[in-house]
Length: 67
Image 1 (cartoon, one colour):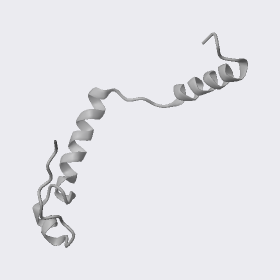
Image 2: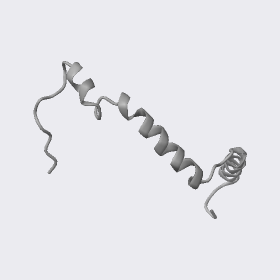
Image 3: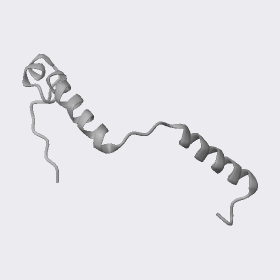
């Protein structure tokens, strides 16, 4: 912080003030909600729903290998 000039410090303070205005939520609340949302959307995901994969004419038939 010693190397920052006055303009950079003002920008940093403005950024911190702006971040303080955001309403934050505890992860103990948001993670279960996220998991619930993901589970609800699994049926719509073409990578997880094999019926949707059958409808896609551009699906690769080969297997992917990760080295």
